[in-house]
Amino acid sequence: MSTATPATSAQASDVAAPAQLASSEPPGRRRIRSPYPSWFFIPAIALYVVFFAVPTLASFYFSLTRWSLFDAQFIGIANYVQFFHDPQLYTSFIHTLIYGVLTSGAKVVIGFLLALLLTSPVIGRGYLRAVVFFPVLLSTIGVGILWKSLLDPFHGMVNGVLGFFGLPQPGWFTDPNLALYSIAAVDIWKGVGIATLIFMAGMVAIPSEYFEAARMDGASGFRIVRDITIPLSRGATATVIILSLIGGLRSFDIIWATTGGGPGFTSDVIASVIYKQYQAGFYGLSTAGNVVLFVVVTAIMVPLSFALNRKQVEL
Amino acid sequence: MTARRVRAWIVGSAAILVSVVVFLVPFAFVVLQAAKTPAEASDLKFSLPRSWQFFQNLVAVLQSGDGLIWRAFINSAVLTVASVALMAIVAAMAGYVLARKRSKWGPTVNFFVMAGLIVPPAVVPTIWVLQALGLFKTMPGMILIETTFGLSICILLFRAFFNTVPTELDEAAIIDGAGRVRLFFQVILPLLRPVIVTVIVVQSVFVFNDFAGPLYFLPGTDNATVQTTLYTFAGQNLSYYNLLFMDILLITIPPLVAFIFFNRQIVAGMTSGAIKG
Image 1 (tube, one colour):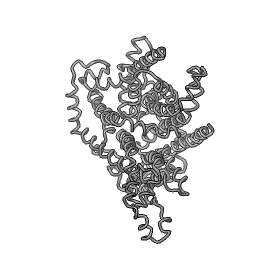
Image 2 (cartoon, helix red, strand yellow):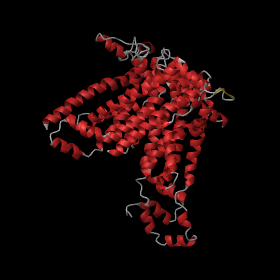
Image 3 (tube, one colour):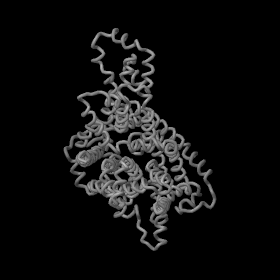
Image 4 (cartoon, chains in turn green, blue):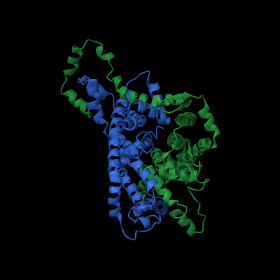
C-alpha cells in the first residue's frame, strides 16, 4: 500500500477501527455488500431513458404516422416513400454522405500534416498550436456569419483578393454547385484543430527510440513518416475518423448559419431537412428523416469502429 | 545542427505566415468590423475603421432589443452552469461504479454509453416527451436535455480516470469506517479534481456554443440563449454588420477566457482516448 495516500495516514491514527467494525456487524455481511452502490447509476439511467432512449424508440413509431404532437395517425411507410421520392428530400441524403466523408477525410489529412509540423522543431510552435485550435472553441453560428461575410460574392474579402490576381470569383455560398463544398471548407477550418490535437497526442506517445534508430540507419524523413509515424498513429487516426464522421454526418449548425440549405436545396443535409419539416409542421416526416439519419450514422459508424479497432489490436 | 536550426526557422516562418492569412486575418476581421460605423461595416472590407466606434457599438449592442443580449447571456449562463454541474456529478457517479464494480451488466452499459455517443437525438419525439412532462420551452427541461446529451462522453472521461485511482484507497477508507456514499463524496471525488476541471471546461464550451438544442427545445424570446440571439440578429439586421460582429465578439469572450486559463485541461479532455483509441 502506498504511504503517500492521505487515507493511509488517517488509518494509522485509528488502528483499532477494523476490529471494532468487524465485530459490530454480523460476519459475512460486509463481504456481500459491495462498496460500490448500484444506485449511483440511477440518475444517469433515468435521464438517459427519459430524454434519450424513449424518444429514440418512439421515433420509429412516429415516423410511420401523420403526427401533430397531440394525435398520431398511422400511415405506414408513406413518410419514407415521400423522403426517398421527393428530390428535395433525398438529395439531402446524398449531401449528408458527401459532406461527412469530405470533412472527415480532409480533417484526417490536414490534421495529420499539421500535427507533423507542430511536433517537429519549428519556431513559433506554441503560437501555431493555439491559433489552429482556437476556432474549435468558437460559436458555430459566429463562424458561419464570419465566413458568409468573408466569402460574400461581391464584397467579400476572399473574392477581392482573387479578383486582384485576376482569378475567377465564384459565388461560394450562392452557386448551387459550390455551396455544399464551401460549407465543408468552413467546417474544416473550424474543426481541424481537434484532429490536429488528437494526432499530436498520438505522435508524442510514439517512443523516440524508433525515430532515433531509423535516423541512425539513414532513413529519409519521408520514410520515417511513412513507416513509423503513420502506422503507429493508427489509434489516433481511428479516433479522428470516428469523431469527425459522427460530427459531419449530424452537422446542422454550420449549414443553417451559412446557407440554410440553399440555394434551393443544394446544400440541404438530413439534419437540416429534419428541422425544415419540423418548422413546416410535418412532424411525422421530420421524424422519418431522423430515423433515416439514425440508420445512416449507425450503418456507417458501427462497422467502421469495429474495423478500426480490430486493426489496432493486430498491430 | 545548424542546418536543422535553419530549417526550423524557414518552415516555422512559412507556417506562421500561412496561419496569419488563414486564421488571424479572419479573427482581426471580426474585431475591425465591430469597431466600424454601419455604412463602413456593410462594405465588408478588411480595413481599419475610419473612425473607431468600438465603444459606441458595444453600448448599442448591449442596449438593443430592450437588453435582449443581457437576458440571453443570463439564460446561457444558467443553462451552462446548471447542466454542466449536473452532468459532472451524475456522470462521475455512474463512471465510478462502472469502473469499479465487476458486473455482468458491464458490456450492456458500455453499449448504451457508445450508443449515446453515436446516435443522433430524435428531435420531435424529444419535444413530445418534454411536452408530456410539462418541460417543453422551459429552462429546467433544456438543462436536463443538455445534461443527457453530454452524459456519454463525460462517463467515458470519468471511467478512464477512475482506472488510474488505486482501489487500495477505497479499501482503506472502508476499513476506516467510511460508508459507501461517504467513500465516494469525501475520498474519491476530491481526487478527481483534474478530470472534473476538464469535464467542466470542455462541456461548458460545448453547451454554451450549442445552437440546435435551444433552437428546438427552448424557443421563444424570453428563453433566448446567446447563440439563438446571434442567429436571429443575423437574420434581421443586415444593415448593422458592425453590431452583428460586436455580438460575435461578445459571445467569443467566454470561450476565449476558458482557452486562456484552461488550455491544458481542454487539450486533455479532447485528446483522452486518442492513444488507447
